[in-house]
Amino acid sequence: MNVKDLFQSIKKSFSINRVLDFDSFDLHFRLEPLTSMEELKVLEVCTGREGGAFVSELKRSSLAYAIKKINDVDFTDDIIEYPGENGHPVKESKYIFLTRQIDGFPVALRDVLFEAFNDLQIEMESLVEKNAKFERFNIRPAEQTEAAAPVEDPSVPKGFRRINEDMIEPDEPETEVDKLNRQVQEEKDQEEANLSDMPNG
Image (cartoon, rainbow, N blue to C red):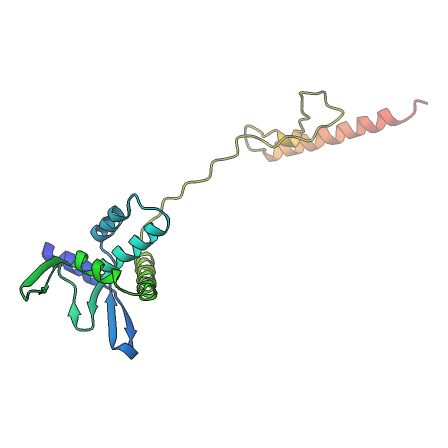
């Protein structure tokens, strides 16, 4: 496979379209997702616009690139040639020609075309994400640096905190001998405590 065939194969693998039919009017629109370059051009046109003007331009420009066919007329070439008012052929970019035509559409028609375009974009994203397989790098969330404020114990002086033996982590894992010695020591401490509680007689 040569380089040209390789990239044609990539383009074909991700070629999807959406047909919007208005059978009562014998109108059929075919839309395709935007290429990266077309998306960049749409963003450039929308730069500096805000609110309703931004949304309107986004719809208008996206559709001018997304519409590839209306009935039997193809809009796949960058340049369109059509007969002018004086009968002489006029050459114009597809984008300029279609934006002018879209400006003449009823708002409801433009909006339903853009809805179909959005649906197409969602399908494309799903197609890519579902079929892409690679090992994702996950960043562990940063550990909490500040410990929660301890509940104050009246038997501990202010500024200090009680430390329990079970809070102290041993430097090395406890062996069976260590466990036995600790148990003996605990029993011995308990016995001494019991003796000290007994009245002297």
